[in-house]
Image (cartoon, rainbow, N blue to C red; front, side, top):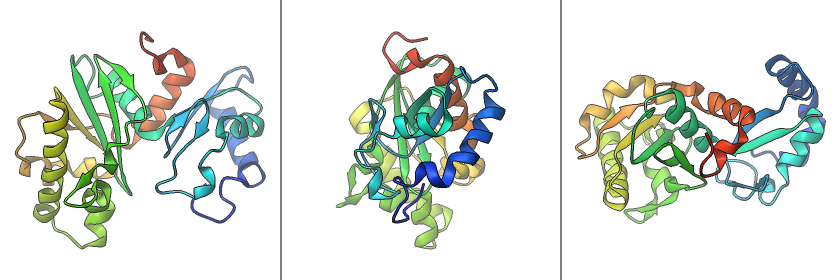
Length: 226
């Protein structure tokens, strides 16, 4: 499911056995749906973007592919949106009123917006322009590694990114997820923002938990869903 030439098209052939085994362990009953999160805008079960995966995912009816491979219903959701749902229900954003911006710092920058706990899906704010470049190219954790940046130099890029989001949205809270959130004490204290900014409570498990929660209650993807 990466950038390989046949990534999306060969999904069933390559992954069917693994997916079936994982689904059977997570949701033993064949009538039990499973949640799947993907690094793409998802609308009506179709993946519409492919920033860090094969371009063959663009326009793919991925939900149908997974449904066929697993032999059960699936709920397909953007990975950052899944993380946002989890943080709002079980993690650092639980009970927070107003607008919460959840970000995931990794290969790219994923974002989820939640207002009073309700998801505003597919925001893709990792792709806003900062200093003439795609924000995630400058400020994702992969940029820190690629450019061999120390924490202070990377924090200056994060300051520009979160400062831009703050000016645009005036959120009540920023939540920072992704694997690097386990080292949040190295960089979050270096940021100078009016908005409180905290590490994700669920760390790298947020996307998994959010997808599972949505599988159990898909109404969470719509306004008014619990």
